[in-house]
Length: 54
Image 1 (cartoon, one colour):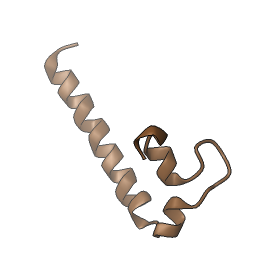
Image 2: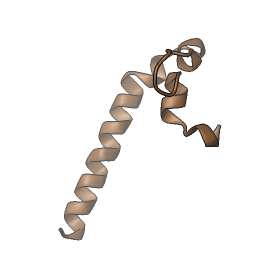
Image 3: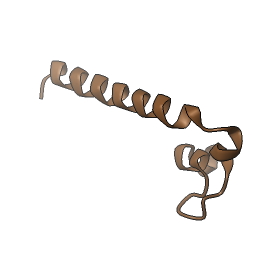
Image 4: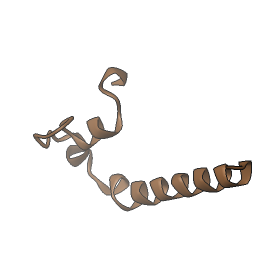
């Protein structure tokens, strides 16, 4: 794999993450963002942030 391919995949990954963030995460209210959902790590926030970084 060459550096151009790595840059391409990095750019694609960053772009898709930004699109998902803007389409879904950014639209949540603070209550929705921090509400415990009862699975895995709990809230949407806790799914994104490592628990030891809170």
